[in-house]
Length: 145
Image 1 (cartoon, rainbow, N blue to C red):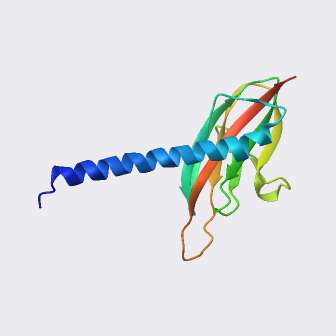
Image 2: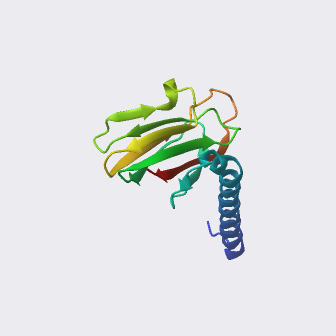
């Protein structure tokens, strides 16, 4: 079957516009809902945000420098179930999980030595008939001690 070039161009243009709109949605969500949770901390240059669907999981490798206090904020758009996240070292040893924490969206900690940590993010499947999609953002801020 031969597909006319007009249809290919239209499909490609539509895909680019939807990706651009999703990116803008995540930037707006991060600016308005996530960054205020870093109050008192200096935001790192890392900006990690993506569209997630229920059941999605991702891992982000981040560098944290010794001698600084950090706040890690992980938030999902309200249409999604409450996001779960874990902080692991590079040997996959669990250092923190928000499953048992009272504050489910942030984690404050102090780094003794510079090291890379993995932040594993998971959006639970709600089991509903409609699979929802929304932005999930992972940001970190620091304070000099």
